Image (cartoon, rainbow, N blue to C red; front, side):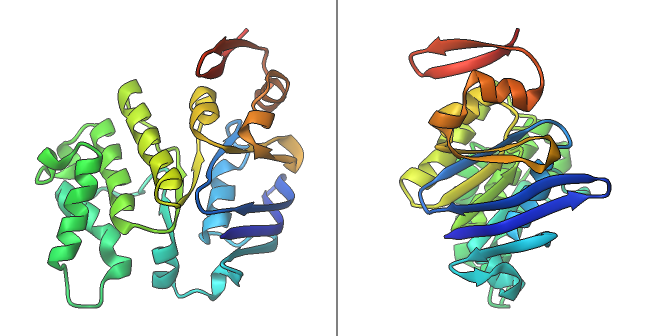
Length: 252
């Protein structure tokens, strides 16, 4: 289980998070919501061990994240960053195989690694493009390959920064159904940054809302995804539309 206690986060001139304490349990799917610049990525990085908090502690199975060797931590917590920061010139399969590094024993790529990578590509509907170079794929296709790399890594806890970027509506739904199945059927924990309130309310059972001044609401999606909370969060008037599968919100 991932636990944060008394977490404080800031960037120069701005407090992002004050005294946050949460526990993310196996089988749960959490969404992080907030305005641009509210600290969603920073919080995701702190909860996955990529950034040290200003104060407080983040633990995995009661052990502080900095105490884990990097490879061991990567077997427990996998991260899909918002951007890679560099181009990858190899094939889609070669890219997904990078996710197997935490499981390698220094003997190169095994048949098991390749099977896991191909299975992950299949899950994302990209198996037929496994030998295409990554730079020749569309933005949405590349994003599906990036998610496949995280699937091939097979951590216990998935941290995804805007996993839906570049995806069309159908592929957004497919990706979220897959992530929800990881939590519900396989007992994984999922934490993701989202901008789409409809998807957050439908596929996440818990929500983190990052407000100005470092205030954070954390709890059940059913309780927090209200018109009042979301209008305050996004600082705009909204209209709530109720459907048989839940409510969604549009600018008023």
